[in-house]
Length: 376
Image 1 (cartoon, rainbow, N blue to C red):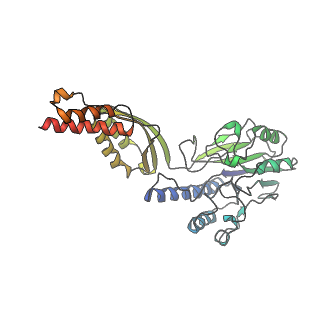
Image 2 (cartoon, rainbow, N blue to C red):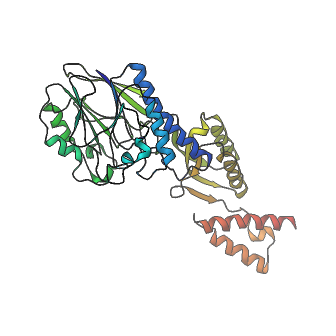
Image 3 (tube, rainbow, N blue to C red):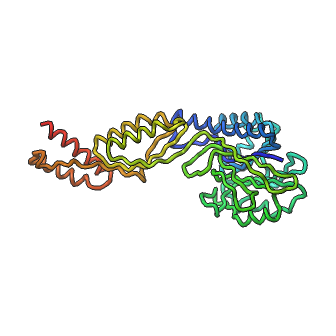
């Protein structure tokens, strides 16, 4: 038996740093990633597909998002089981209950309901633990596991939530302790557990039977191995599964530290921007360490602005960046400043100390002042 696992499509997701056309490209990429999951399943002859939660960004996504998702799912050739997660829980206002979702849904698509087992192929049970609210405690999967006995055949389970031992944020606080999952695997309560919520491809524990497939398209800078799906080859006797990773994503979220001291540094930085591939699908966050003459830094800013429309997004980490303007080397005496002009020069010099925005403005004013003084 072979099946494909995916999760965290989050169709309809908005990112604050994506503007206009870039957001539209990102939306389409997530939809194409979902389509690619079905193509992989068809290409390897998968018996079924599992999507372990957060198919939609929320239960309030627009009708267009839902209709496009349904159209993608209609292209699947194998049965596909969808789990409600923390973003799209199976509550009273669930997108899963809406006519927009249900009207054109293929017979091959099943939204996993609590307390039910499904038989996609003889001798195999698929059982899920859907979220019924955004913050269920304990995690629904724990409650399901507590009520199970070892199956006669093969059991594949689908859950959603964070494993504290792995680290990172846990959706809604509904944690899945590693000890509970390891014990359930050891007792044979399931032969494979597909998890969602963690966007990075991750094998959980030591059993080889618990995996996060990761999001098929990157969503944040902290994700280590996003843009994937997995296929699982599970022997008929329930022996160890063989997992294959499939790369799906086309977008990249990257962080780059930039140190600028002179015009040469600016030129090398621009060469780096030029050399990157897939710029329109790259979100680049810059952590700046800038210290130079005002004209050099202004040139850097102008060059940066020219590239913003080329990349998916190009922005600066304000909280972690340092931006200092080097003060002019000449003194008031060398410039021949007297009276009020000298007083202003000295006051600007005092204000230019440090790395605050006001200090930067004062240092730039010193350069302008110097330019005016030397032209006389």
